[in-house]
Image (tube, rainbow, N blue to C red; front, top):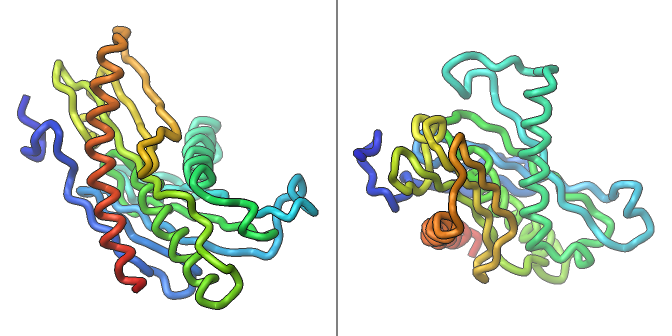
Length: 241
């Protein structure tokens, strides 16, 4: 099957991360993944949620939203539908879990790091792009606190990135754009650390169940793409040095 943008089945869309995209955020990054663009910004507060007060540990959380014309038709700025709210909550929880998985929360002190992920343009893969770009924004925020002497080191245990894989017709494809995503009969979102560990695997079938062999093949395809994303992250963070 010829892909809509002529990529090979195991090829990522062109990806670029711009570090420090917003001047006033403690950390920020714009990630561009093909036509998908997500702005990630980190804010730091000297407080934690009530359930962590007095525990001496910090918290990393995320919020996710789509701008009104990030898609082909306008999305209301404050959608109140259960479906829209549920999707945003699911995605921001995924982003938060992914970033907490690689953060030493005990080393943050009683501080909350909120990662805002705003979709400027959506062409598939917004949640995985938000995780990949959110890590860069979080790293920059932690780096700034270390430079200011607030933190003794950058309390990140590893890098984290994410991508999508799926089956369209009979082809296993890496990094699905929207046109491929809505036609996929199997669709996975995969989050991994640069230690080769899985943080989360979300996989669904549309109509026909899939085999364990299919899972293994798709996870291997995702891992190959995520390794490339780690290299993009490393290049972006070189600007800090």
